Structure formats: C-alpha cells, structure tokens
Length: 426
Ligand SMILES: [Zn+2]
Image (tube, rainbow, N blue to C red; front, side, top):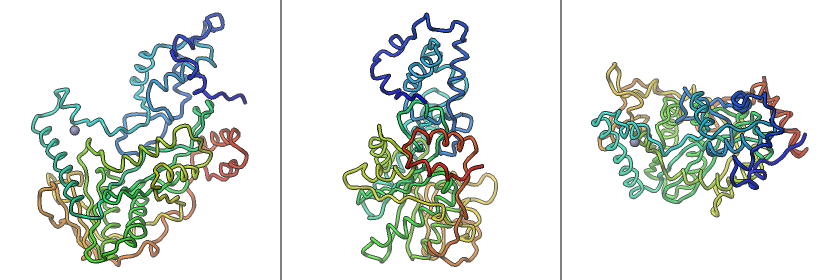
C-alpha cells in the first residue's frame, strides 16, 4: 500500500486550490464533482458522540482536523488528487456540510447559545439578564472559594482522543479507537491529575465518572491532606447530566463524605460559560500532542504526563478499575422539587454532601443551603476497594471499527499489532 503524508503535500502548496488543481487533461470529464465530494464525506468515519455540548441533531466526523479549512485542504490535496477530480469551492464544501448537519468534533466552550440568541434578537431580555447574573454569581463564587479554601478543583473531560494517530493519509478514512481523558485541576496547588481509558476498558456513563471521582478523592487527595479535621473538598464542573449532575454521582459523593467524614461540595458553572482552569491542562496536552505519533492508546500517557514541566499525575485505567454504584444508593433522586412546576435537576447550582449522610442543594449561589426534599434510605458507606466491579470483561467494539483497525495496524510497527488483534469486538 502506498501511503503519503498529506501534511507534507500541503506544506509545498501555500495556495491550495490553484496550486493543487489537477491537470485538466488528466481529469475524467464524466466524474461528477458533486458526487465525488459526497463520496468524500461518505468515506470519512463519523462518531457516536455522548459528549456534553454535542448536539443530537448533528453528525460528527471523527477527524483530527481542527478547522473546516483543514478538512477542505485534505479534500483538495488527498481526495481530489487521488480521484482525479477538480475540487469544488470552499463555499460549496461548507454549504454541503451544513446541509447534511455534518460537524467537526470540537465541542467548543467559547460559543454560548443563549448569548448568541440574545444578540440575534431571539431571546427575551429578562431571560438573558438572568443568564448574565448567574454567570457572574458563579465567577464570584469560585473566586471566594479559592480565597477561603485549600481544596478547590475544576474537572472536565478532554475532547475525545483517537488511537492510532499518525500522518498517514489513508488512516483518515478509517474508524479508530476512542480514548478518554478526564482531568482534575487543583486551583490552589496547581497540581493536575488525568484519568485515561480507551473505549474497550470503560464507557462514558455515570458509573465510570463516579468511579474516577471516588478514586480521585480517596486515593489522590485525602492522603495528601495534612490537617485532617473539617476537610472540605469543592469541585467545579459544567452541569453535564451524565458526567456531573446525576443521582449516581451524588450517591457516590455522599458515600465518600460519610466514609471519610468529610464535606464535599459540587458546584456547576453557568451553561455556555464553563471556561475554567482545567481547560489549560487540555490546551497544554493538545499542544504536546501536535505531530506526535500514537500507536496504541497507552502512548497518550507519556505525552500527557510531559505536557507541563511540573508533570501531570496520569492514571491509565483498565476495565477492572470501574465500580458498580447500584448498591451505593441512598437517595433515589436529586430533584429539588416533588411536583410539576417545581425546580428540576438542571436548576441545581450546587450540591453539598455531609458526613452525616445528607445532601443539601442551592438553586442560586447566593442562597443558603437547603436539604434535598427526597427520601433517603440507610446505606453502609464503602471504600473504593470494597465496591463491586462494573465490568466483568472488556467492552466490545463494533465490527466495522474492528475491521478498520485491522487494516490500520498493517501500517504500524509490528510490535503494536498484537494490541489490535486482541480487541474484543462484535
Ligand atoms: Zn451566555
């Protein structure tokens, strides 16, 4: 198989469309350019996306491209050249993408839908003002917490990583293995912690996130705390339901609070304005990843560790790491109201877990804590080791992904092929 690095091709052509234009004599006049572009998009793998900020109406391309321009350059330099077709214009290309609801998978934090709608005049003044106020309150709350506490963290999942990753152009048309990286940042000490796993070891469900948070608090944070009285851990995140704001996570944190006799506070930033300190970790890691070859998922560990001079603490997770939280259940729901019209889970701004086994909540940071009006049943608090495993075996990937990876592995150094041979699959 002949493989050519597309980045090298692009480097030689500063003005892509004109310089890469295929010699007209060689172009097959019968090839429909529109159809060729459609084929190009059909050949790019899309990904199932459970990520927060991902819209369900959109289809996400599994790509390593950061911008539409990069994707267009690849279309011109790789697809059109190898298929001997003249490229369509960038405008037509982008129009086609939006008509098909196709997006690059970059869940951006810098676009607030509410603010955008207000600017476009489709948002009520009152709703917008409330949004701005809540955003301000969250910012102030974090500042105050940082000034008065020693254990204040921000947490977020990095945008999905892929394995393998290289500059071999044929790889861009193949489905790859997804790799996840959940990062915690200590806003006071500046320490960074990463938990990395690939999709055959665990998914992106509440139990997986609750497992990592539990382990993080019990194994990474508490042993380091010098003054063991009155420990209060405050963790900021976005309000993503399956990751951060759900009953599984709440029961897991309540269990931690009771077991270790500590207080834990979870605080949610205003939707659309979830930029936080942990994002800097993602940026450093992305910078370090640039032009790096990834043969197997574990290759990310060293890259992430070394993304900063003061190394990040990275733990690479296997399926046996994750715990099943079905038996760690005190509250049945974290809804702050009981009847229709009452506040909903998405209205919660903050949750507090006490060592006495209670959950309190706030709908606004300025308000006092209120006890969650939900029934709770007694439970016996467990340490991380005492919990049952979530996965008995590794998780299967789809047949198409497995087949693609079997082809991809042929261009990898022989030492890495065994990993791909052993992937569990349908
Ligand atoms: Zn906004």
